Length: 354
Image (tube, rainbow, N blue to C red; front, top):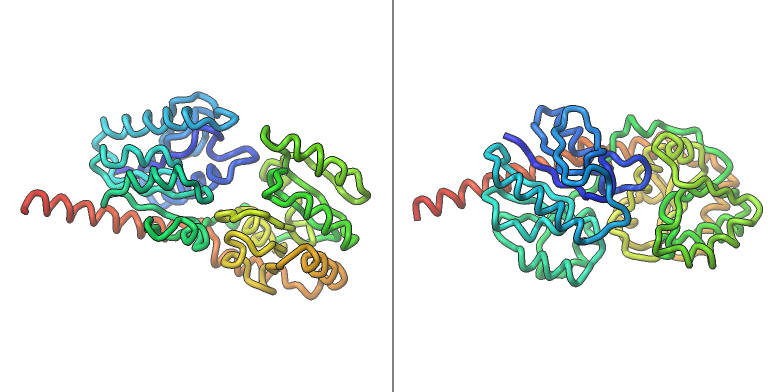
């Protein structure tokens, strides 16, 4: 029997550059396949995962994201699952698929990769059945969902071997979308005030162009600021591993923040604002620091730059491997799979023998 994973139609699996959700889907699919589990992945036709059966509606990733493309993709996946008799559980990473939860006779798990959204909240509430399990990717995200929706919590995990320990360096790093909620301007200001060079990897999306031109372009012209563009995996890991710290000055309740654990796995500490999942992901003094404002971020960065030898990069990586490996994430998901499948069997027995 197979586990069906439903990814997005917006980015290939695994992603070449941007694509946190798709990266997690890739990690999970690979780990499940390595454990002998048959996996059917609903993604885009340009996805490539050895040992995983890939089904697709769209031959290439659709960008920018569109809710109707997501709905078409979800409908395609669930229709295909309905005609099969070899799927024992559906694990979706897109919200639209939950609308079909009560139409299939196997349990569904939905991982929520987004911040609170009123329309999606109503969708989940309307789709709620005993066969649907919601999974938050942090306790903070779960708390913000509201008390009327129950959700399990499974933190993201990555393949530690793909993020080797780096030696660090004199400058800081910023990796992510060039969007206001990501705090790019704060990162640039913190580095300038701390007199620490900053290398930035990422780009603005279509909706962030005005913010980029007004707030980011002028700051990038300052001495010591280097924009590297959007990076694929290898150069991104090289950037993180050769940095003094990774700045994460988010201005929103980010559900997780993959770059935090990517940095930690490279041995590079994260300095983050106290928003979103940062408080439960960062171990103070071991994998980084959670700060209250820009002044404290500047102070932490200055202190680290003055005495980089005081920070134990090996200890940082070891803690990240323990907490945020793809194996640990998959262990947690497989426990949820087993529980959901067992509940479905009990439910069937009760219907057969009332």
